[in-house]
Image (cartoon, rainbow, N blue to C red; front, top):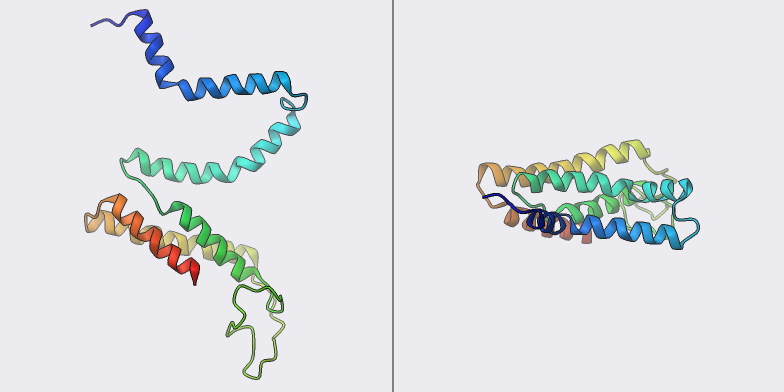
Length: 164
């Protein structure tokens, strides 16, 4: 059955309503604000949103394959906590862990240990988070656990590890 022109327009508006509203808001803000549509503001917006694009692409890949990943946000937070722990100086008074075995000797004298190399920390955090994702994927693929349940469980495990 052939759709009429009005039905096609209605379908287009329903399917793309959020994008249309976003463009209307950008045009309105650009007309009413002096510095909104400038190159500096555009670069600032891109710089502030760039890390979210990486996260969104990872989650989109999961959603496209008819799954869901509830653990992604907790994994990002855990990765940040882990990186912060590994990058802190041993003599920093506000350390995450005051009694780290590698930061003090038996007699309580604090060693002057410098923080780890940021590139090593980045690689280590990515490997640990990838390990958690692999474990979740193994449960989904080989044990046939629904993605919702597996990622919910991993989200709680990561939350618990982050609280340590």
